[in-house]
Image (cartoon, rainbow, N blue to C red; front, side, top):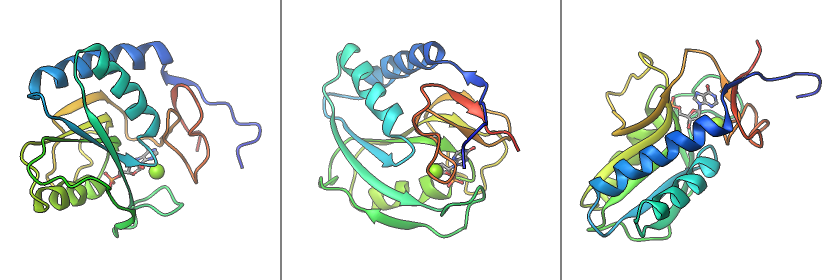
Length: 177
Ligand code: IMP
Ligand code: MG
């Protein structure tokens, strides 16, 4: 349960908002007119919502779609198996796609989603993650846009969860052991 635990912010709302706008500005410069943002649920929902509004402010006019995939179950360690619970609605063939996720750790989730979307015929394909844990990636997948690097600790908030709790925090903090 989450009673009586206080989480100290690692990245505040203000810091996240500033960095998100910087990322959106970079993304808006990278993409030609057509852009389909694919948010990987559930962890990226808050970041994706803010990134989309930041993209609007940066002059972009993206479409958005969602995919729910997980390699974690309810634990803190990746299970090594990835399941798609909800697939895309849009056809990505010939589209310029930006995959958005909350955090790149082992890279299993993202390498699977990347291969799948490429396999479906996406034209341009980039990855944007809010957080990255350096040195933990085992799949060779790289993110093109990274918000922040985080230490090798379990972080929650701003969409990131532990057992589906803490997603509602407006900031990101380290979950006490
Ligand atoms: P990967 O497949 O190991 O790269 O893990 C990616 C997914 O694991 C993310 O989308 C998160 O849902 C989850 N995850 C990895 N590290 C953390 C963490 O520190 N806090 C919360 N979720 C995490
Ligand atoms: Mg998660």
